[in-house]
Image (tube, rainbow, N blue to C red; front, side):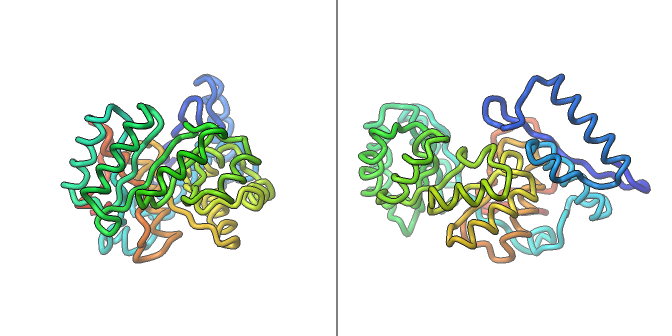
Length: 308
């Protein structure tokens, strides 16, 4: 997008089988073309029309934010965008064998991360518990905050016993213990779990404010984990945060495998909505997964993401 010689670039990032607006490429391109034509005619973003297409909305919001910033990648004026303050992030450890996950944990700890998030549910449960137990034998809760993400890998039948096992090891929270769209079972787990539960995939496709409020009221999670590309763009993310805060529910923001274009926008939004001195670690380390990425002024030093 270009206006008076100033370029605004946005990323429309869709995850197959996960994004609510995932569809065949040709169909997606057709919708994107129509939306862009409408934006050219009206000069603005058709927010309500784009609620079902969060990845397109996020891409347009990013492009417009860069236009407003006169082409700068510092989309909003914050201590983070000025390079005065970094955002604390968690170290992400992907699922793998016991040996692979342990090696990755050691790598994150040596890099200086004080919060590590483990993807669980892919290997033998007893091996995963043994790994978590070993971490806690080596590092106290004060030394390392542990988060786990089950990605819906538990069942309603075994979830509570596994949550009870995990609670012995000072886990900060668990994301999405069972698959989404099981509101009654998820609400029961949130009520009875000895471990704080965070919702992630559960929020995908819940795009209207009334449905968001209903979900939060019925399930009552401890936290929600927000990915702008999946959860309503910048507008939808702000909406989720406001509704959660009204109910005493915590939140944090994570990226969703975007390139550095999208990651920068997510980080800039995070700094804007949560304000200076963000204390809760955010999930903004996915850029490390790429060996070939787009250049942006982002750099991880220790356990903080900086805009340099």
